[in-house]
Amino acid sequence: MSTELSPRARRRAATEQRIMDAALAMIVEGGADALSMHKLAEAVDYTVGALYRYFASKDALLAALGVAVLDELAGRLAAAVSDAGQGLAPVWGAVLCYRRYALEAPNRFGLLSQMLNDQRHLLADDGLAQAVLAASVRTLAPVVQALTHAPLPPDDANRRALVLFAGVQGALQLRKQARRLPQAFGDPDALLCETVRTLMLGWGAEPTAIDAAATAAGFPGAQP
Image (cartoon, rainbow, N blue to C red; front, top):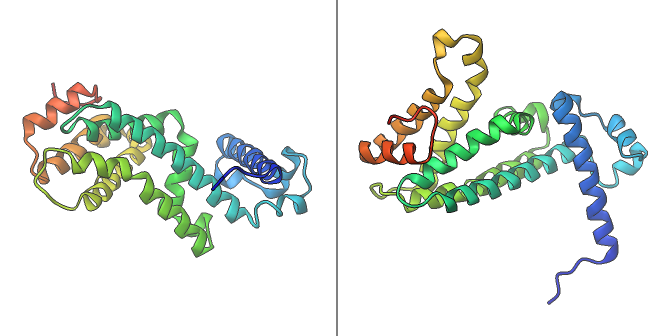
């Protein structure tokens, strides 16, 4: 059975992508709060009414953006895990990939952080919020795979992936505070490395294997 889109469906998809690209550009420029449907309509040369034919609300647009960004991140994580080798290296590769994403795409990272931490502020619609959360769980699939095949005592890899994500997300969000008050927070990369290392130790990984994998991955803050 053919799954090829009709010309009309392709045109609609292209228009939706153009709207999302313009919306993301506004967010990159001024953050999520800068997104306005009226300004967005001007940017894509549409009336506001026409814009709402593609996205029913600002919430719907933000949710679509969140899912798109998560899908992009999922692709990066999958590539990082695939390229990292064996043992604990794929886990460190995934962490390093997310760190790099946070540094290279701070507005995208900020949008995801706001959606995950304070969805009521950005997404009042529970259904849309659930869609973003479901996408975030799918994004962790490469991390689950890495943990499943890691040299660790058997346990729930999905649960471990969620715990790892929570720790990494928290450590990455402390980077701004670390820059403002370095004497209190120290080196943010060392803090991130310690967070991941502590979790791996708690899961039963060998200390030498943890440090060797982190060093091999070129992780900043890793113990030589």
